[in-house]
Structures are given as C-alpha cells and as structure tokens.
Image (cartoon, rainbow, N blue to C red; front, side, top):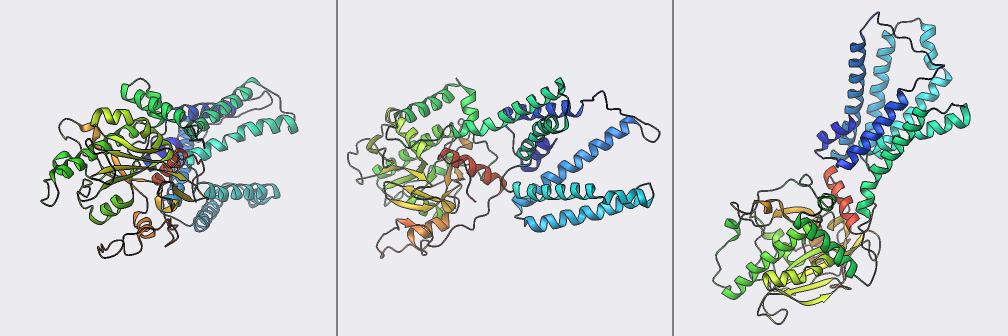
Length: 486
C-alpha cells in the first residue's frame, strides 16, 4: 500500500524488479503474521461489529498510517520543512489524540493507569525514538526504502526469539525469513546494477568504449530491452517546456554570416542532436558548457536552443563514462555526417569534431566535446582536464533538462522527448567562471575565465526537489560516486 501511495504522491514509477521484491517482502510478512502456534489461542467475538467491519477498520488504520508516512516525507523533501518542528507537531498531535481516545475507552481508572506502567513507558520511548530517527532518514531515502529496511525486523526478531526465548522453529517462520531476505536483496540489487557501471580509473578506455557502444547498438536494434530499461532516465524528472520543432530552428541566414559558416553551424546542430539521441539510450545527459552556456543563458528566450552563428565552436559537457562512449561513435559520426575528429585525447577528456572540407581547428567551426571527473581533485569538485577548469559540484550537478532538440513534428515525433541539459545552478556557475558581470557583454574587455571556478561566490545553497534528488543520485552513479551530496 505504501508503495502505491508513494508513486502517486511523488509521480514516480517504481521499477518492475523492485515491485517484485516488495511483493516477496509483503508475502513474507503475511506468513509471519499468519503463523499460529499450538499454545496460542485466539478468541473471536462478533457481539458488536461484524468481521467485515473489522477488516474495514484495519484497512482504514493502514491507510491513515501510510498517508501520514508519505505526506511526512513530502513535507520534509519538497517543502523544506524543519524536521525538529515537524517532530514537535507530530508528537503533540499524537499526545492530544491519545488523551482523547483514552478518555473514551471503557474501564475504570485503575485499568487505565496500567497504561503508564514502567513497561508501557519504555515502549512509548522506544517508538518515539524510532519516529524521530524516521524523520531524519526520510530526508535521504524514500518511505518505500525505509519500509524495506524495516523488514529486517522479521529476520532479527526470529533470531532473537530462538536465541533468548526458546522459540520453536517452524516452517512458516523459516519461509517468512527467506522471502524477506530474498526480497530485500533483489530490492537493493537495482541500485547495485547501476553502480556496477562505474568508470574505473584506468589508462585503457577501450573496454569502456566497446561495452557502452554495445549497449547503444542493442537499444537501437531492439535486441535487449533490459539494457534500455536499466539506463532509462524516464520523463518524470524535469517538467518539459514547449518542444522544439524544425519550423522554429530553421531560421534565415543573417547578412553578416557567410553561407559556409551558416551551413557548418546547422550541420553541427545535427551532429550534437545525434550524440544526444545515442546517449539518451544509455541515460547519458549532454549539457551546454562554457561560451554556449553563457550565450543560451543570456539570450535563450526561444523554445529551441539557437546557437550563436558568429561563434567558432559548440561546447558540450559529458560525464567521463559518456565521453568515452562518444569517442566510440567517431566512425559512425564520420559515416553519417562526414565530420571527423581533429583532436582526441582520452586522458584529458577532449574531442574536437570538424566539418567536411575543414582541415584545421579554430579556422571555421567545430564541436568541442568535453568530459569531466567528479569529486576531483577533492570532494565536491568537478574537474575538466583539458582546460584545467574546476567547478563546484553544487553548481554543476545535477544536469537538468533545458530544451528539447529540434524534430519534425510530422514524421520524427520520437525526438520530441530528447533534451539538451544545463548545469543545475547556471548563473552561479557562470559567475564563478566569467565573473559577476557575466550577463553584460563587454567587447572592450579582455576575454578570460577562471580556472578555479568555485567559491566566487559559493553555490551551496541549492534546494533540490525529490525528483531532482533522485536524478542527482542517478548522475553520481554515472560519474562513479554512489553517495549523493548533502
């Protein structure tokens, strides 16, 4: 029930493997709860309400508990609610409700006084501490994951009962522990598979290129749905803007731009769109960076990204793993578009693509593909080896969907959900890179950028929605880091 409600509240679809794991854990709990020993007697009385009414009351109690838990998580994550204030409100409300219920319970004062016995108070304190810890945990994990972790209670309870209370081993208990264990392992394996795709620090990138290229080819050919499902970025993470169509991006050539330059820029747009399309199959975001990010942030009022026709290059940023994937596409890009790699340095994570009939870099137009490392040279920093530029990860990540790439609204609708990304805090990143006056073009000033492009100013005041937190976790796994930033 909590998984179902959680999906509705946060508009997130739980992967099918995790749904199966949750079903196994639930079945394990039912087997544990339904276990009746010979020395246990249950007396059912129907003098007041029917069995059906009792079931409805239990379901109502479960629904209230589930709604409260998920709403609690939503308040903590999406509305930046202070967890201490939340705990105070929760427990004060609980005390008031318990006093009201206690006053209407049948029985004399002596019977009610037993509620305040030493054993009862210990139980109350234990549950209160568990509730406080839950509020802290829900800032980092979801309600569903918390419940899966709590499933370990079944395992530990069974072991403690046997070890200390002489509990008799029965088949239903063993089956319950087995199902909960298997379900918990399967649930945790979903993230483990994603983490297994880390890029290891190595000088030999050939295996990375080959394996990633195989994943892309398998998705393109429809040979392996599992791979595509594993890398699926889904469409729930960032609310899409209006989609970009060829009708908008097919602009006329300005008078001060030559026909040759205009053609090269338009061809470059198609090459970048192809890279975005291929990396989308393996969950790889492609982001604007450097001058193109600056131009788009200053002038990006269209629903399409309109690259600067006067610029000499088109700059895109990729995670290190996906940079090597683009290197593996080199021959495909040359075969389809005629663009060739004039520079390719896999150690410093740079690849420069030139259009046909252009022999030299910086002599016309080019596409600069940059890779970067995360948590390098120290924690919470992202490093671009080619330009030796370092950004704060708080400003750079997570990459967020910005605008869709151009597509034909009549014949090419599959491209309408393919996005160019931008850094999470673009204005703070640009301010660190170009200075606080980055929004004001000054042709008289000497062009510069900072190599230590962080903490000038600090960009650590970000507030992430639940969706953005999940996307950050996914992107950190791509970069080889399994623990999300605070």
